[in-house]
Amino acid sequence: MFIPGLPVSADGASFDEAIAEMVDALREYAQDWQERLLAAPNHRDNWGLVQLISLSDDEQLRCWLVGAAR
Image 1 (spheres, rainbow, N blue to C red):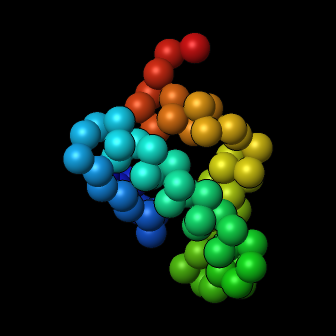
Image 2: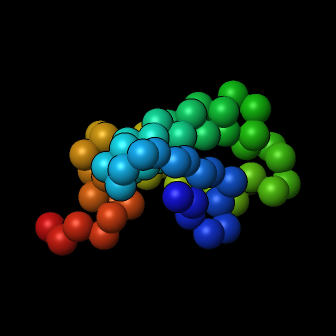
């Protein structure tokens, strides 16, 4: 799976596995962004995504990815 416009993707043998992998990939991206990507022109504007990831737990990110209703 991928998120259009973002440099993050993941795959898995099942839908749930792919979602779990995407949560992990988002966490890795947020960490990379804070360590070295925040000044890169093609990543600079992703600060909102990094904040969303940082302030969400895994279940909240999963719901965000699949569009689960509250």
